[in-house]
Image (cartoon, rainbow, N blue to C red; front, top):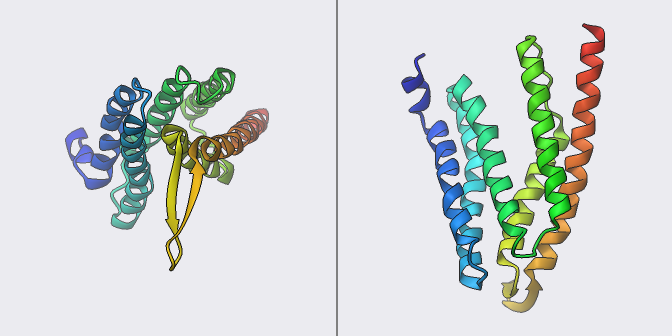
Length: 196
């Protein structure tokens, strides 16, 4: 399968769409306004949805490719890290936490490259998947930031939610899972190399 054939399938095109959304989200987060935040959250949410759809389609249709396996985690890291970095000057996330998350991603990516070069595949744990889910919930909340009124239930009860508090709650859950999954991967990595 050549590169063109491997690229031109729907799952990979959805992944590329997620990458293309990164600069749009970055530009929107240059503006500290309710409207910009709503647009950024909408685009980020749509991109996050493609993260679950593209993998499911690739497995269902049997079109998993080496390129897709490379692009999918890259797209996830790009959009998450770009969003978190852009939220720092808006004072919506602590810079130290974003630095630790970024450092974790760089270390684990480096270790995966080392393992891959030795022909060793270290399976990702469920913790990493949960970490991604919580990040995908937290970040739109932090983008929305302001108080929003929501309608809920059969009688359309109205209640107000401070989206920053909502987002930061899930952000810290994702932060703990980021550290936990990072330590879990480090443990697996050194255990595998100790045996080799």
